[in-house]
Length: 246
Image (cartoon, rainbow, N blue to C red; front, side):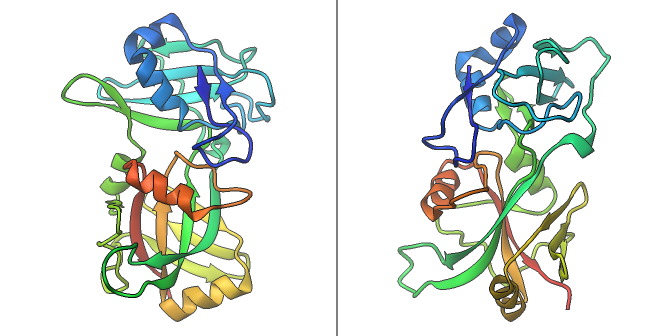
């Protein structure tokens, strides 16, 4: 099956073939695997921690009944498997790669009749090699990146990002500029991003920034805004305005 790879941004990405078990095909279906593959990227093996490289990685799904964790591994470290036998092989959070990208975005997005103002934003992929799935009322498994982060105070992004305002920062998310860059702390994760001085100045001027979280994009290399817009329209971005500590 196919997924994201390299330094591209999801739509139009060079596909990455992954090894899956027959049980995984039975549980997710071909369409479900294709959807999942759009959110997985070649980072590090979640068993040994070394780069996955060009070899087709093995997909492990740990079934937790109402949710599941899908992760990538070297095939010589772990065979493809749908694991619901009780011995859950949770990967260490230290092995999961998060990537960030600082960029300026116009707010509000298009068509509002008001002039857009460029605001600082931090785009985060919280886990290249591992994503959460959730089983819906229809019994179908779906990628749950947005669900997970809305549980922690972010919002599913609408096409115009109406809910984003410096006057309504996300509660429970802390951020500050340090000598090393921007540090963001959520209840379940901490992310760091190196930022240019000019971007840091914009964060200070705005007293915060737009946080956009998605596993549909890999935010390294060239970062076209239209790719973020496409992910927003696909319903695959959780967003919020984060106030920075003074």
